[in-house]
Image (cartoon, rainbow over all chains, first blue to last red; front, top):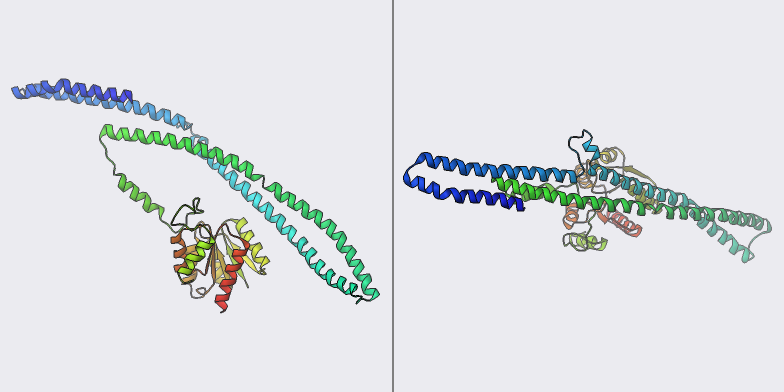
Length: 262
Length: 124
């Protein structure tokens, strides 16, 4: 910044130095002298611009180094941190997918075991009550006794299996630790990138000012707002409870739909 | 009762499939977006459609519009199960002719209630 101010100051002092001479030569009607002075002012302006551009190029270069990308490297794309971050997030998707599928597999494997225990217990209970009411013949009781024995032995085996399944479901939740770490690293990277981008934006603003270009930010904002609207959806709302245009739970959905006549 | 479950995440399809099985609906099929679901619906004699909103290629809302525009399918009950939670979106889905709307994350109880409500209305 200081450097920039000094180059601007140089230009300002050049103008201040030449202005009275220019005025004098114009008053005298010495057009040749006036043209020479204008050329000198113009040179000072160009010099300032060159210095500005040189400085900005150096800053741009250091910003690119901050991004850890070597543009001259043919593998720059593969080496970029963004690619690395995408791979890390892909890992998160893979891990969460594996964990969810693992848990669902185990739930699906456990359901028939629980169903058997429930179904057979009900059936045995009915027969057991008949036995207690003394409403059962001896050979029927022998069948019941065999079924009770089988039920007990299968229950022992199945409860071991269920306990193992529950343990595995528990272990499958370990993905949270690993993916949490990856997500936190990517968050740090995004913050770094945002800071570097901000530096670039500020620099671009300085280039615009140096060469006198003006952009309409309103137009740019309108354009990006227009691009946001689509039927493809937005995904989960992160601050549903703080936003007015978002429902915060199913009760809100039901209320809204019933107000529409559902 | 034949039900088509449409979601781009296989885990969510499996969760819904398991919940439906607990409710006694065992005849289900799956599709991973609207563009694969639509031909299945057109040729498959489905009685019920459960769809997500946000999917690649064809979204759930576009699938819903296609269904309502199809002579054969226009009366098919459609339940949307989605993370999309903007009021405008829910109104948009209602206007497109959705029969029920469940926001993720949801419970088995909510899914059961909405499905039962839809069938009550369809049969009643």
